[in-house]
Length: 228
Image 1 (cartoon, one colour):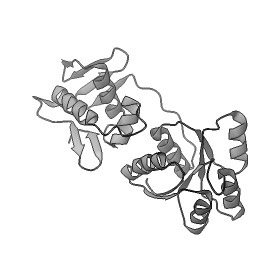
Image 2: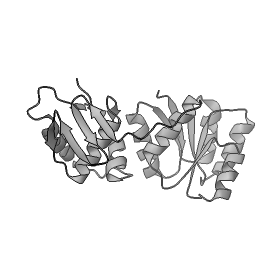
Image 3: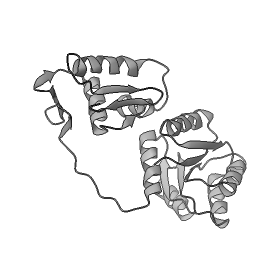
């Protein structure tokens, strides 16, 4: 899907983290660190979605949002804010936001909301699967057992969660940012090799001795679980 995103956020660390996450998912990202610059970019260029913080220097987020809509720009806008009461959300949506996400938030959820706005279509809820499969690899989410070709694989809790997430996205490239948030609940890059270590251990357990490897590293992008 991908596309072009404008992030209007004055927190440098948060903006860098969000921008990195979108870039990993093949989005082009522009960033403004204050309300006035954000308004200029939002009304001067075309974006698929605008990510707008409410608390901004120079011009607050709601004023920016109202000015964007007054200029006739219909680009979907997601408001980000530490102000997360019902009244705050209503105020943001009434001002013209298409969605409202409270801080702190998960990047995976933000990405899902961006993609939902891009689709702009009705969706149906998918039933929760208790058994996940990729080729001859099976993971039972209820009994928490993993087997490959009938061979039982013993995993530590973190390894199980890692494999579960990869199997939920079987065939897709899963980025490091997605894994950090979904498996470790990190909303920042710890600057360690924690993912590499766990991926290496998991690969040994599910692929060693097998004719067909399933866990692949996609250089510069992340990882993919697929029978390639």
